[in-house]
Length: 92
Image 1: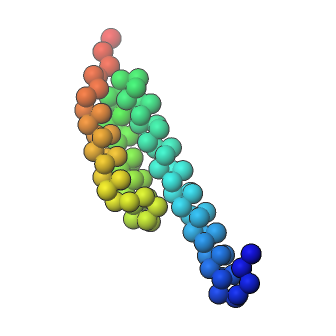
Image 2 (image 1 turned 90 degrees about the vertical axis):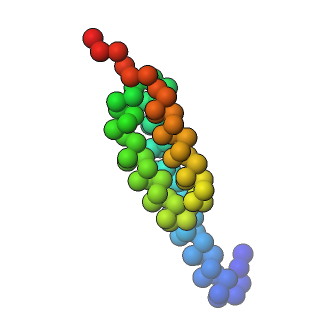
């Protein structure tokens, strides 16, 4: 355990940052899982509607520094490509 006052403060700060990063990464992963589920079920309309919200969450996660900007860009690119490749649900 840390003994110096500065090390103790730094440890407290790292715990706070860890909590913030965990919250952000959890929200990011949840959104990505939702849209991947829609892509898997070939629900193009709902996936397209959800895409802006997913992009917003990814951008926020990048802005907070939880994930790298290139990682965010790569995920956004792949998701948009996958959404476009899905076939729309047949109308009844």
